[in-house]
Image 1: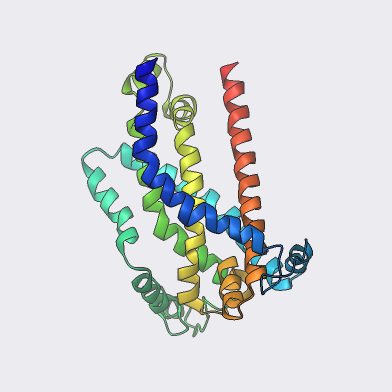
Image 2: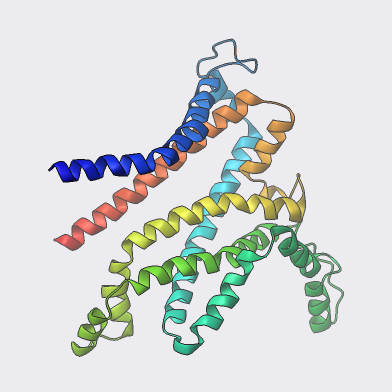
Length: 289
């Protein structure tokens, strides 16, 4: 008992520097953000919930929230499925595994500015894609892929191309932890490839699933760099995201609006995480029966 208590204190001692940094640089600032969400711009007059009503009725906030939610609901499931499929293929690739890993992870190490420059060369009105389509169709193509109706699809493809290798590595880490004996036993029982994936691979990857989803959502907010470099501060309405809105509010020093919107976003993220955990808990409970 004393040994366990000693180990617990040692763990707390080793974690103290990190916990102190989290408390000082994350928790305390967020507490101040919550406080400011109930005050006026000068931070002196108590406004109650007026700031929340003002932000909720703001058309720019609603547009950015809808676009961000639309992006998450579209890009995250695609990234989840595609990265899982690629990880399964790479895991069974054998000797060629290293080549596939390198080619798929390479976009991670390329700077965002260089990535966007390449995309602009392909997608601008005089870019490579329009020239290829013009050669195929025989008609001049002057489609603005970044500032038109296709802007959202371009942003989704950019996000997938940038992050699919990272998620693939997470899946591969989970796959490597699954005992090969389980697959051998399934083969002896006559289970095919799809049955092995459904009854062995996916149940063993449940913890990895939660990690992949959380990190994918976190990385999805970084797509603002690509959106900003591709289309500027005022992009097409379909890719006007929450970071764009915060950037504009920061320029006008609307501190109360930024604080209120940040609190609303954190509450929404916590609610989504709670729903996801409940779904995983319910699935685990059904399997345990």
